[in-house]
Image (cartoon, rainbow, N blue to C red; front, top):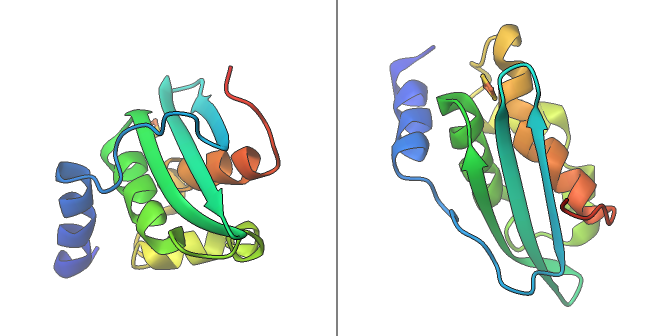
Length: 124
Ligand code: FES
């Protein structure tokens, strides 16, 4: 991994953006990876068909936590249809394209939770 991209990911892990919860969120969803026990929750607020606010919480490895932090920055302000069209590849590119395949599940957990939240799945 190139050092500037590693620094970028580490910065998001140490200083997560959009960490927290949204009271009375329009959509919320939480999902984990059973094999490691890590869990991410996302709360969303939609306004004028755009993702007006997004907050994440939960616990996980550095890659999963940095990825969801980076994801929240990328999708804030997007139209809902754009968010739904945000692909796994887009997520991996947002991470600098340097995450190894063995960590893809970590890198993509936040995006999985986001998509499920938007299709109306409810947090447990
Ligand atoms: Fe659990 Fe990365 S090891 S999400």
